[in-house]
Image (cartoon, rainbow, N blue to C red; front, top):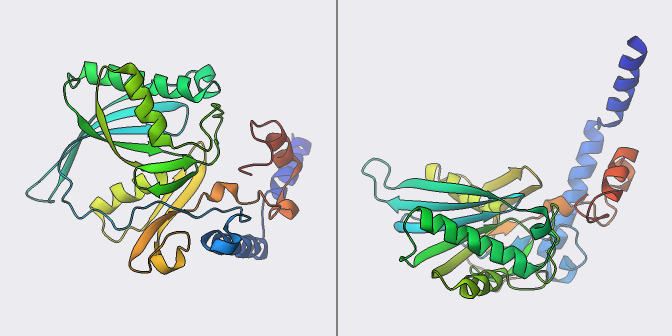
Length: 280
């Protein structure tokens, strides 16, 4: 018993970093974040600091019915969101939602298969709630690294978290969704925005507390976003105001910044993962 106990302690102790080590990791991460924000170093930076085109936080003019999609792990969620005036708080949200689990072969097949499956889930949800006849504005939470050109246009940089559907990387995700909806032809949707789950989290919290300006996810993956001064976001024109930046900090270490901290266990897990060397 004791022998095993001390052996366990010895293994666990390897995972403990001193305050100095943690401060070193923090310095390295900060450096990568700064490199990600700057045009001349962005391409090499492991932390991509992607502009989201979410410029300021909602001021409450968003009222009505919306459809919300959430794709970012093994489950896919469809929600009906009602945003209306509320005497006390100025707004309220009521939701109906349904969870669909994504079959393994759909996650690793083709982009068409994946987005046809998503369109099928939307169709099923609209049937369940008698909404087929309505052309609702749709917001898409898509929790993968995306290079945005606008709020409703963004290129998937690379899949993470066990997804590998071919023909999606390098393409406009909103376009893939619109095409799949068109192929079905049994409902219409107006895709108005695509955001990362970190951004969705930050915005939903902002409704309750206007001082919120960071969103963080600790789930299948780990990531964060925050509000940055526009003049520091070099990848987007304009100096005024602020924009939400999706850090994609899960890729920190992809350039070797964590080599002196990684253990044999980290290496085994990485080597047996779908994308070895990435999302360390």
